[in-house]
Length: 488
Ligand code: ATP
Image (cartoon, helix red, strand yellow):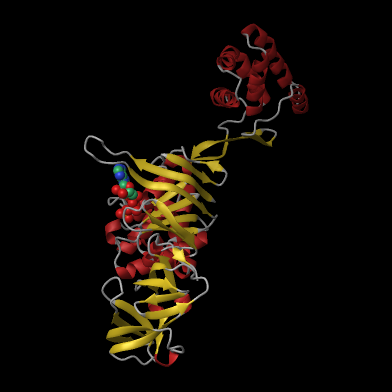
């Protein structure tokens, strides 16, 4: 299911008396989420992620804008009508119920549209008797309905079917008559005519039906000449419920624990039960609000892999809210980075990492985080302090800038090819971690405490001053005022 957010906005009203201003939690958000995509909504606390998710779920109503599921505008639908599965951070399973019953719970009152046999299929002679015996009431039902719209036509037909067990085609036909003849005395002869018709053989009835221009209502269909199936809202059968619970439990791999109570499960298993509970109704969209934040580090890793697998297996369009950039990067097909209710950037996680649009996005993604320096552009060259880092024709405007360099963007020793373009850093600490080394460095133009560098452990580095070359694809320049990216 494709999801489109169009100019989605949410303003929480303030309180003038208490001097509380309005809060624009979500500000003109335009996002297209492809069918089957897992989208990570990422941003710091208070940026509007949850409010966006709750508007998609129907739990909060937008101040402005629209939400579309496929070609259906769901902006004003209730949560139940949207066909969503929702998993909260606090997944709150029912402690007194078994896992089976927890997963089953959303199905208990679920009504599905589906074929159900009319309770009693009766032959023409019985219908004739019924119509004869109840003609007055049948006429009342027909006359009490306004036949102008399809809805009441269906309702009348259903009434007749259930009240008198009249086969649907006959019921439809009766109120067809009612459409043309609205008074009792006018209807009476036609009831007679129906009775006469019914005494003819089936073929004759069909002919008669055709003569009246009767077409089968789409909700009713013949199975064979004596059998009628009614498509209607109904509860699931016990077997259907069991099949769904078993299928979903296998999918999220909790089928071994169905008889246990939630407190007999680990945190990760409990979270999987919550996911099963959200999926069991086969929703069109799965919405996950920080679903891993109550789990410890190891379980988080494991469960996020699980979510990814389940999402790929079901192909369900999923929105995953988190403030953890590593989590969002590892799980999502696409991420939206948000700040103050605004979309900062949307793209594949690696693309956002490799090509941040602004300083906020650059700083938000990456562990260790990007190293940001005060610098400037002068005569087509980029400087940090006195040192020239790079030159480019595209750096046309002399100005103050922020310079971001990813931790993996440094090389030194024999890798410094051009001594006229280096950054000298004071290496304070060297930690070797197998293949890589982690360096902690200092520089007076650095914004923050420590510069963090990840470098190949074969490279020779000494404590104290070292000259570093910067990999051009790992350095980003941002305007000193707007903090927008300057491309070079
Ligand atoms: P977190 O990661 O902390 O959950 P978030 O990004 O999900 O944050 P939201 O919960 O969407 O942020 O909140 C966005 C902004 O809207 C915040 O400034 C918050 O204070 C404000 N806000 C949220 N709910 C209400 C409310 N009911 N009334 C007033 N302001 C609200």
